Image 1 (cartoon, one colour):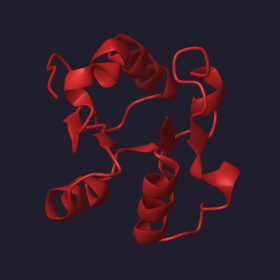
Image 2: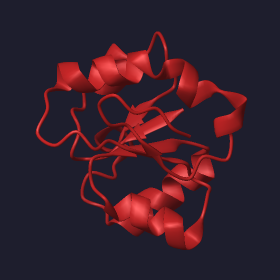
Image 3: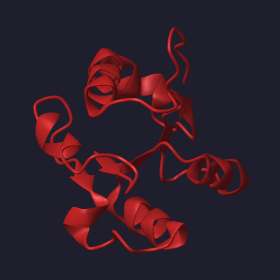
Image 4: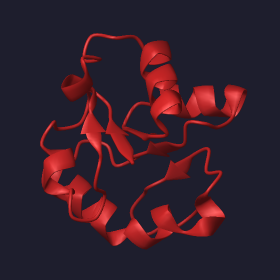
Length: 114
């Protein structure tokens, strides 16, 4: 379902397992020291959506398209609790059929888009 980038807490997959089962963190699959291209290929092969605060994956999605899907969290310096709340609040948007070919979702305060 979701693959959390190195810049996000490795606790997120466990804490979101009720709403995003099967989610992983790059550390769990041995990609914590991998470059973006390796993470991209692994996510695409496994059918996972990359969740990151870095713009690198969003930029690559513009150039290469999906898969994988990208969830680019644009919240600046925020806590793990903020990320948990954001993803729980946006669960329906992320799972909606209209987002099935999502290339980039900007998860900013007060904005909803697919």
